[in-house]
Image (tube, rainbow, N blue to C red):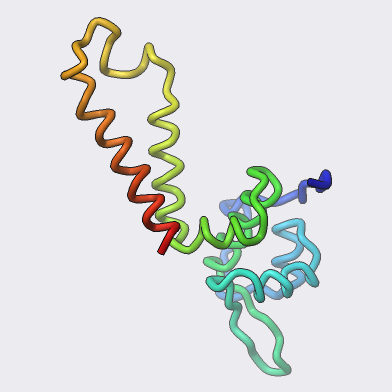
Length: 143
């Protein structure tokens, strides 16, 4: 994979609160050129900015949030366009929930409730829950 330069983004909480943003504003906040944003509309089904007089694109705050997530998936996590689209099909909330569960599972052993002295039966419900989540994610991706 070619080494892509990571865009300089602005955090969502630093973006002024407005009803609509122009494509140039969206470009400034995401660090992505306007022609790339227009191309992404063809690749990401959830990205549909409103069109107003003269066919100008107007992005909502939700669109900006989605764009920032797309930038993260593509440039920070290394997803392809198709992979990022699949990841976003469940929505931003599902993606955040998945990330939070990964953070909990990745916690250092000293922070996990089960100790090494716990019997296998005591650890089993945690393992089954993790397996269930993994299988549900696989089923969701296959749909």
